[in-house]
Length: 196
Image 1 (cartoon, rainbow, N blue to C red):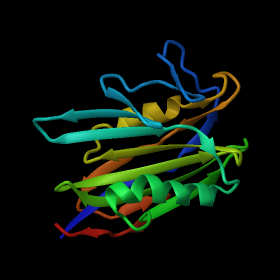
Image 2 (image 1 turned 30 degrees about the horizontal axis):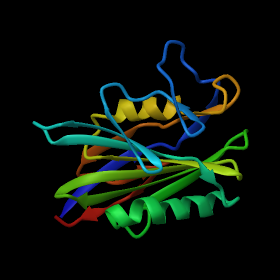
Image 3 (image 1 turned 135 degrees about the horizontal axis):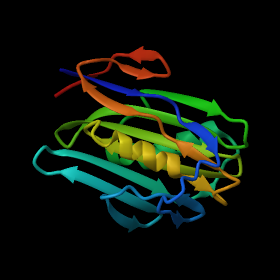
Image 4 (image 1 turned 30 degrees about the vertical axis):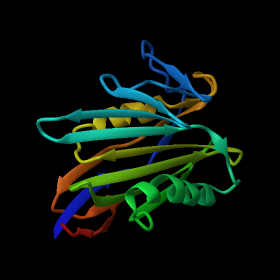
């Protein structure tokens, strides 16, 4: 058995987070700064950014999904995203840990993570669902290393809904992979064993 530690803090909402000089692109009503040096593929209903190191085997993947109508409930939106976006590919039954945040704006976020043994590697899968009760935006991060933590953080902080000066942007806080430790989400710890 192998124990894994995934540390991350909850998504935080900021206003007017646009950084001057940052290359911005739009995808289905969401403005974002693409991660530099990552491959970009547009799939049916999503953008996928990948980066890897063939010599070390490290990789990271970010999936940004098209804006969809919200059910009106962040919990229901998150559960639906988990069931549709995470379960078919990675087969976890439910997030190992999740947390929800309400912001001063109408946007709220729920984040869930699970560490899994997938394709012969320990990996972290993180789902972020952001909703204002009328529409929802989701993105997924998958990695087997903390090497791409900064790029995930920069990508998450670049997300903007509507005009860059008046709408919120999302800042994804650190996701760190450290072997042989517990999982921490908002200062709570949970041990997770993965069969090898």
